[in-house]
Image (cartoon, rainbow, N blue to C red; front, side, top):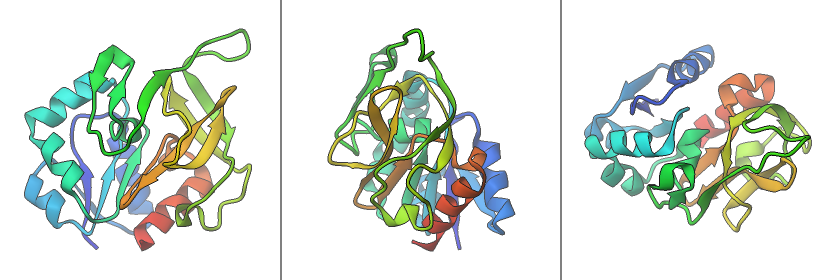
Length: 195
């Protein structure tokens, strides 16, 4: 299986590569459009800041390539947010693959920003979550979120509901870190690799 992991200087990419290795999968870290187009599956992980990430994608022409991909595609954390249309984080225009605008969490006495740590999943509605149970815990690190919409396939709460996972056609994405989410995250990666 030919797996491309998008290289756009996003943080946490090595952890995703190691998680794939533990599943017996050797992936290629690449920004090469032809390698991305010819891959069987694409992973788009990342941590970082939206406008800087978009500048990097544009500099490599990937802002034009990624929306045209037709193979199974999985965004992780920042890789999910970049699939939206716009982010409040430095007023960034994004890839526009999914119709959501990324908002900043509002902090209060009980809810610090960033939302960091283990939180559970609700209202799972995708084969991506086969074998995952309602209320299972996954690991989040994010200050910005996608609101719940028709594209939402799993929800989290902090304190209001937000999109923990989204989907449009072949594009799947999760806000949490699969590679840091123990057996649940491993199962989600395995489900994606079977698509």
